[in-house]
Length: 208
Image (cartoon, rainbow, N blue to C red; front, side, top):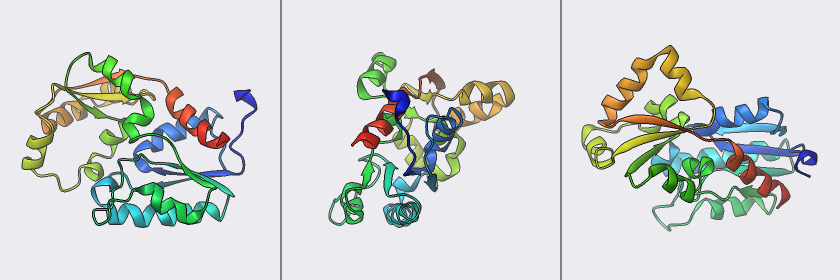
């Protein structure tokens, strides 16, 4: 049955951190959406900008398609004034705009149980390839104090890699991984996952 499902008539609005994964799904022929629009990576740090970009992108998507799937997590946006989430904002567009059921981009690639199995008891700072590629945007304005507050309390940083990004970087420019590790004051390693969870989350909203 899954083979007959199509994303025709649907556009996708996603955080730019998952650009590479969604592009891969396009190349594989799975995600034949009318259009995929991306916001700037790292906007979870600046809620006002995230709100503005998501609403603008959804508006643009609705000009192309009747249905829009939003690839953002429930923890990516919290209004500091009324603590309302992204779903509250999306309600203004009506029932044809739906957000995937995930907490963030990490959760979109591996659920909690899978991450616990990968961690094997270690304290892990989870990364995606996008968090590495777009480091200067995702960690914009992080000073040494914030770095020391967030990273060293973990045992390791693990990149959930479903697209071979880490291996390619290790082959072509391994110094970038070493520099990233030095910047975090934490060892960085990769764990290879599939795109199956992300596919499932998208399909759930397609059928919703």
